[in-house]
Image 1 (cartoon, helix red, strand yellow):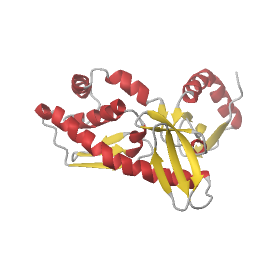
Image 2 (cartoon, one colour):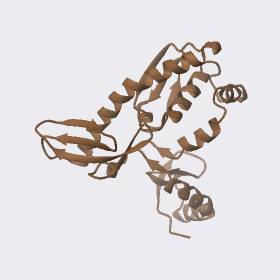
Image 3 (spheres, rainbow, N blue to C red):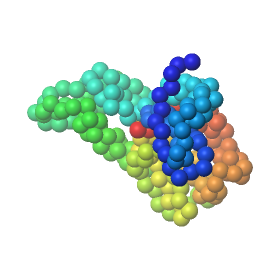
Length: 227
């Protein structure tokens, strides 16, 4: 069993808990005045569960990790991998080729700046392509009477999509990196919330009618992590 490194956060709570995160690692939340020995024993008892879940996290693909934005690394767009080519040029540009994503910059910049510039490019592509995919799904499902009050595309840190109680659907722009089947799954999921604003049995019955293989797609989607 490997040694577990974890952060402790004390607060006005009554019990110990463990939170695992693909990037932030292990956090133990503890009541004030809890001894380190008590925390160590608690973590030790949960070690098996922690290790199993950490192993799952090791297989998660980090979509926006800073280390992805260096010359020669692979980036995703619509589910396909493209090799990042970084060059110097008279003016900034980004060109999507057959197998490459070529970026030209007038001055030397670091990975953070490259990620920021490409993030804007991905956002523009998401706002260009995803609305038409939503429209296509609305036409396909026209017999279900889905009428969203608004559709927006924006970057979200922890959700692929959302549907407000007022019928406003938001789709995460990061989805543009994934294959169309996953984008359409998220769109269908959020459209179902227009009828059932919860995750009860009726919601999943409707979702399965629209997307029979939704469980397979959901599992694949969970293999990606947004940063």
